[in-house]
Length: 157
Image 1 (cartoon, rainbow, N blue to C red):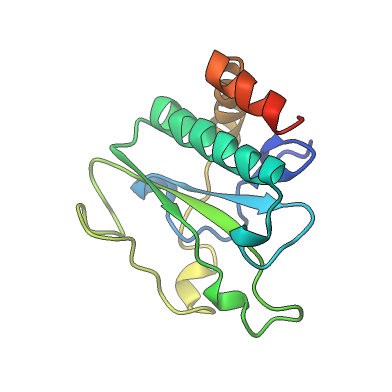
Image 2: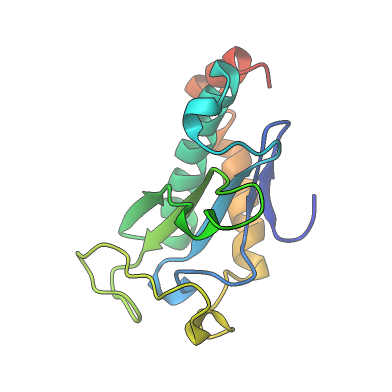
């Protein structure tokens, strides 16, 4: 597992993106990526779908616990990839919402600047290595809880 990976199993990987769409000061940003790419969640097998939900629940809970966020936003976007070779790839954005926002407006949906905007050139801060290590540890603890173990068994993890 590389240093920017929060979680990885046979279907998915959760990463700390190089260019976050949500600054760590606003609650942070992680991305769930399917290893064998598909266009849409409707293309998932039932095992992959269960694992997708299992991971999204555990990572969201870990972000609450570790980052102390007020709210968790799960964003299934993919619009910026429509013109990429092979088209859009299914993935999920985890956008934490801090009690006090720096770049966002509390109580409003996440505002994204257009693709290629200079704000994504290092202005929005990534989660720190300490935060990634703490999130990794907390996700692994959460995944030992009975409901997550049952989901993993059904997903054949």
